[in-house]
Figure 1 (cartoon, rainbow, N blue to C red):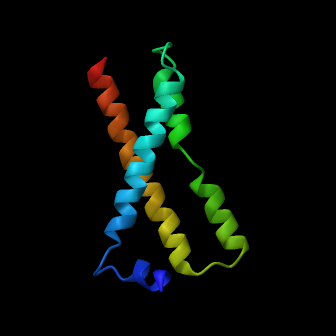
Figure 2: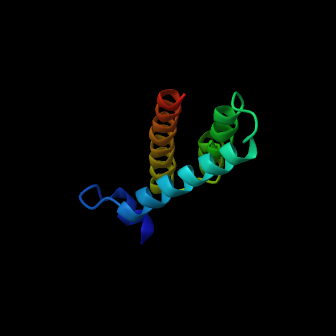
Figure 3: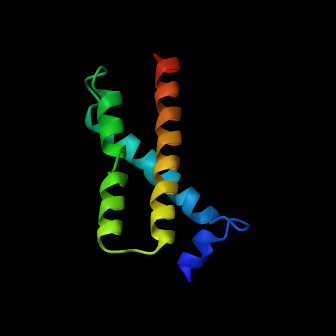
Length: 96
């Protein structure tokens, strides 16, 4: 059921997009909090915490012959992750 919903572009899974962004923002906050005393390391720690490995997820999905909807979901997740991280980097540059 979920695979069919992911491939239907007329009705995008908004809840997944929102969850993806919330999870990424949370990981950025946790990574930033880990390096709270070292301002130079803070952005790198935040990005490292937020960057999960979509490439590895694609390899695992391909090796297990997952349906195309899984690949589409991983690629969508990676795109949302990239947009959120770029926003964080731009915000951090303006802040400092």
